[in-house]
Image (cartoon, rainbow, N blue to C red; front, side):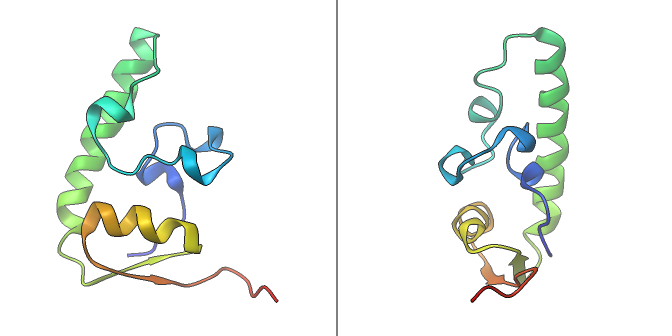
Length: 92
């Protein structure tokens, strides 16, 4: 499995500007904690349900790939599996 988007772990991945903002687990309370609008909260809850269903399928994979080193901890904590880094480009 290759992760290209923080949308697997956060309700609003476009709003993440620092690695400390990435949720460390896909817990329902953490996933929608700061949302006040009831419609937005309902949509985020729907996304959370889809991610939980996807998470059940992803636990069967032997190895997960991420495009950046900072995502290794996030994926490892959620799936307890081997995580490899496959960078999109080479940095020197």
